[in-house]
Image 1 (cartoon, rainbow, N blue to C red):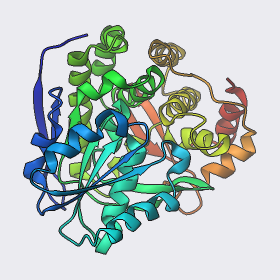
Image 2 (tube, rainbow, N blue to C red; image 1 turned 135 degrees about the horizontal axis):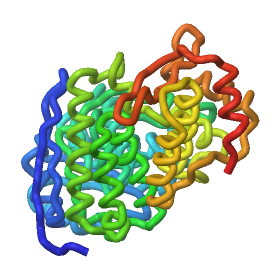
Image 3 (cartoon, rainbow, N blue to C red; image 1 turned 30 degrees about the vertical axis):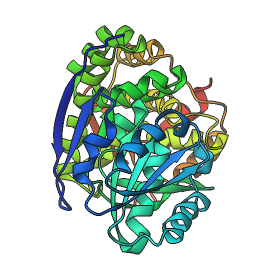
Length: 364
């Protein structure tokens, strides 16, 4: 494991406002975020897994300058619900916090999504800051302003676009991340290579052993590259009217798995990994990818200890669940597929029978 401190930053530009992503491993969270807290009121939202690890180290320094309260939610995708959002609202109301409050999301993607949604909707919009503590949230969900909660019939169906004031990706938090969660984050890292940069895929193939061994400098480089890719896309399409949909490669298939199997039983990254293979297999059936390229995708996912096939789901059930996907337009399922590695496309131009065949053949 690398012990040297590193620091880097980049800017996300949106129609709402520009904000920085700071990538570091110095563990001085309070010092890094304080300049971005506009008022005196702060509510830290975290969960009961992250709180014992990092809440005190963040809260105590902030209390020197701010009125700091906390809201600790249960951990897990199954708690990404309106009930949890109401817990955040209840704490804000109990403390008589107003529009000057800044919400701080300390945790993974679930905490970030819910905190952002609470910030977007409390008093019609207050500030929030993302401190993502999982690799998946550092490279994806903390950046770009997508916030929300799940519905029993579909993932992330209720939410809002609400950009943070800043994102602090502290690599040192990954030292307490379970191996399964690290792998889940690597699925999103691999996704960026498959949709945007074939050279990055080659880089990942070389550096995957170092990342699996928790080389923080190497992981930090991967986080920076992924955030740069996402920042480029968000700058062009903040509200997913066009090109931003490409970031959902593997997600339509993956969300079927998460919804069907019950939120939390498959981690998001695990479901996306299997979904990316299904999308690649459909791309092959359309003549866009070769069998060797599909095998290459499976190899890199396997190197990251990720599944390459979904659980057993009846094809018709899967297609019905896909009907709830946010990319459905005029009743037609639209999928992100690969014209080639590094070149993704959003399309409904495929034979439904081919989709049915992929859903029928892929089994874990």
